[in-house]
Length: 114
Image (cartoon, rainbow, N blue to C red; front, side, top):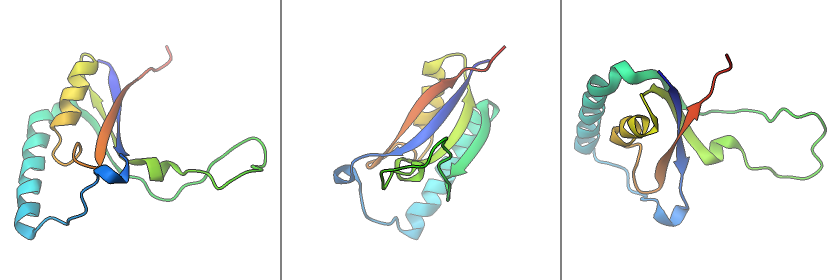
């Protein structure tokens, strides 16, 4: 079965909502997330996570900068299995909190050699 990389991406700041959810709203979100995991758990290969510090590895010294870091573009990732791209999009788009104002998810198939 094909595997897909789901990248949580930041959208332009004008679309982002800045309010923190209340404790009651957080509990509701956790419950929805647990239900999503129960529904799609057999198709989730790697729940992934948020990205931390990193370093760009390159063949020659960088002459210009500063450079955009991946963590500024990608908030996190997960890997899912699905019969096709539409199935992977179904899993990713159903994940509570993944697709919201200020954030979206890019779903791409992973091609493995052999």
